[in-house]
Image (cartoon, rainbow, N blue to C red; front, side):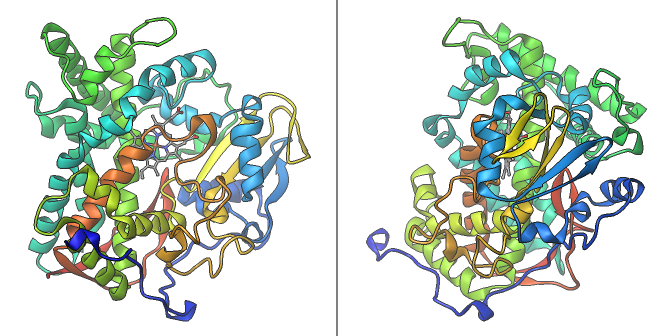
Length: 463
Ligand code: HEM
């Protein structure tokens, strides 16, 4: 039987034979505050110092306080886990997210966050997520067909965005009607753009309660989304069956400690949060994975052999997704080189320390996952695409050395959903198409997520 074959492996190759993709270069020397603000608007990746690929922490001045830039596993653990109560999400990111996501699990703090996390966690158990495997596999097949139908290079980022949008939309709402999907999708895209665009005014040290300016287009888009979501919630409440999709789970979810349910407004904000947090991030992970395998035909051969052995001619299910181990390693390596969330910010709400280094209330920390993932003291040949480094024998031992999904109590709630989806979609594409680079250099830029500037053209040919 094909599935009983020897453990799959990537071909052994010397490091020089491995693809070295484009990388974001950091600052060689500190720059003025005005220059920092300019770079933040253009591409926040550009403010990371080059030295942070060599040392675990750098500290500099910041508006009368200090900014600590960190890129070491112990330092990450200190902020996200050991001293988590001393830190809050950065005021900048809260300013950008709250007008659209409300006081949702992603933006809330303290008891409000704890309650929402407790209620939502059961929606993300293995069994619940496995239920979505056929939907994800079908979306992967459809994506492969679209990429293969392209006359000339296909714009991969756009197709991946459509694919992950379809998955999250159907996982949330199932096959319901009752709203104009195209209109709602367009509204959501406007809202995600609004979240992703840093304005100069966002960088000023406003008190946290100052409202953020929203364009008339974004206000209208928010209205369109909220109306559609409220309509779905009301419709579902009126029916006898809550449903097995995420909306159904949100409606029937109860706090195990108190028995309390989510309010309709919390459910609506959670729906938007899952779309905002889960659709573009997964699309980006897939886009970079396809870029990397396009430059590595031996890796593609290994993935195809794995798909043939595990799935044969049948559509993969959740059990098969668990056995696509090389495909999973490629996704992990893609997120190491290009973490969809490359930098997170936090602000100290009390005096604390980071691995013994003193921190004062009001200081800012930048968690530079991008530098952590390419740190010269932690990884062999950190700039090379080497999915074998995630094999059981070689994978990093420290839980905070590889952290595309963050870490500690606020780590991504959708990790399992995202990994299952990315594995199934990548496998569907690679098993149907031979992928090759198109033209030109690819530049990573950060716009909340780490995107390829100007898109990602690649060539697809039927296998
Ligand atoms: C490859 C895909 C994904 C990546 C790279 C990713 C990354 C992350 C990261 C880094 C965080 C931590 C943010 C912080 O600490 O400030 C996070 C949190 C979160 N993610 Fe994801 N995510 C992905 C997919 C998803 C999906 C599919 C969903 C939902 C269906 C989701 C929902 C959330 C939520 C709700 C939080 C907030 C959790 C909390 O604060 O308790 N994410 N994600």
